[in-house]
Image (cartoon, rainbow, N blue to C red; front, side, top):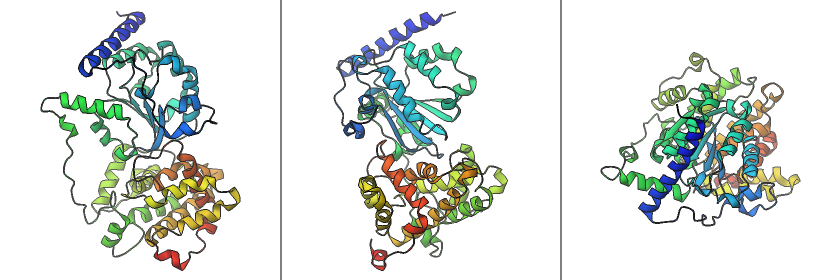
Length: 427
């Protein structure tokens, strides 16, 4: 039987072997310090974890396909060990996750770029696993390890005695980035260029040049009854001009009657297959009876998924930077500022947003029971209402986005009290 010490030595040998093989293929020094990268956090020098955050190793970027917060860890962005305090890295990981672990969340770990010069010690890994107690593990619903190597599999064997069977079932190895498309919204991912290039090399090495799973099928025209992944205008045209999409009106109506007092409503996920089945029914124009699923979180996730899969966010691309600038406005003027920003929305978007926010305000009024205050709802819905036209919402962009959404929910009656006639014709 192989001892833990033998496995540790084998892991070290395997990592060095992988480095040597990659160096031989691509002709670079694996122990070379990574080139400096500009990340969105790099300007915030007052942040308590600036020394770690500036590298962009950890990113929180929207939700996965099932409404769960998406956390990304990129090994290739880790500098050499002598340039990074690994204890501070662990504290930063916990500090970041503390903001999300009360809800279901997903972790994507990009393994490429972990080398002997920047890897943390096995002692550190053991401490990290022990520090991440049940609070962190309970609501972690999926852990995707992208581009796993023999080193990763050996490390997993070392930790096997510490890892529960239930936690082990959450792990999924992902050999190619294209495989993530089945689980995550591609637009939500922040993938380092080094990882993209590594994936291209792996695919090119396959027989025929490309891995079969990387071939993207030609897009199909949407069905007349399509609800997900099409514009508000398309849905309205196919529904005799009705402005509120059926999937929204039906989920909101059901949740009003059955979910207002459900603790943590919108914070929990639902069974993946159920969500896929319901989406398929909606897209085919078939009736959806939420009562038969016996899970109030199904319509809640469906509502979030609908918003997230709009080709353009409900708050539109042109307003993204104005929303980000809300934090620069004096607190006493923010409600008025938010109202003015919304007046720039197209009429259709404005009406759908008003319908949604009226409901979320109603949910927040039951926060003593359901624990969903305007702030908590904003953390859930902010990333589903606005995102940039290029890339994803970065970790530092979440704060202004959540503040803006919280104002809309808490001050719904003021923000949507009236709309200037001139604003209604703005594109």
